[in-house]
Image (cartoon, rainbow, N blue to C red):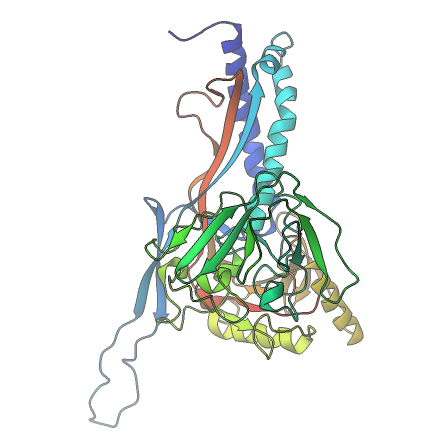
Length: 460
């Protein structure tokens, strides 16, 4: 028999407020506080089961051509299509309230709204930051890359230029420093190491885990993490990843099953498979032979499934060079050739330092830079009639040229509360406490990978 006393009535009040008051506010805030999520259309139409199915048009018919009078007609051909899939990823935000806190609100009408306000608004902000970071990654939850083998004071590489395998290697994650740690210090940091056919996730004792100030004086500037764990040492291809966002993998695993986060621009706007990103060790993918192709399409088999990438002349992560207006225009033109004139690219996203560099180049060339106000109130600079925007979580040293018409967040469910048992608030077994869980089932995908481009290895 269900309890119908005072506490049950209070719980009902909480549930009603969470569902009818906070949920619409959460959806509105999350959809407009994240630059990428606000620019990319949400698509619910193509979800079938746990995956979205995309039909990619990659080739035209060759059944055309000029012929002589009386000559044979061109051989009939067909339009080339290839189906790919976008697997759904699952994100959650969880808050708890103690029984005494709930009981303390029973006498004042409406007080429950003020009591839960702090926790609910906090979890909204935290989930927004989490999703925003994921939208810049490659699904593996990478927060940084180690730059030394010390067991208690671990350097996290700030600049990838000049790094060697012994100081973390040139590769994805080495430009992050500790920029993603401020919002991700809760829980236990995890170290990922790669070797032939195996990717190992090792737990690190984080009792004394902390982030110190950035070393800005050395030529190989880095942040320093204090981690009490003598049993884990840096090796080629070692990263620190988001707790529980990556699973241990071996040669028998299904491709991509170990990556639990949403896909981001680093995984989409590139010309390689995903394993070549998170297993990179300054020259290769550490002999990791399990391919992880984006949306199931291997770049080794499908040349058209590649974005435009403009690296340093020595190769990606092998050096840095200054941003130039000519390099920007070359990238814009190359992406436009693939996407189509007046179709793409339709937005440029980068970091604040590179935006300042762009402004300096324009001023030095005695050109005026117009500003634009986009839907949602976003401010942007004008470049060739399209907005140039910044995102606080954008990858240092990189500038992305995107065709957002060919990007979508495919979702099974928008932000909602878990309430299948009839109430948003559920009792935590064994404790005088209740919890509410916010969830979203969605994934970022692309219909045309070659409709995007990126300039990399820029000095910042």
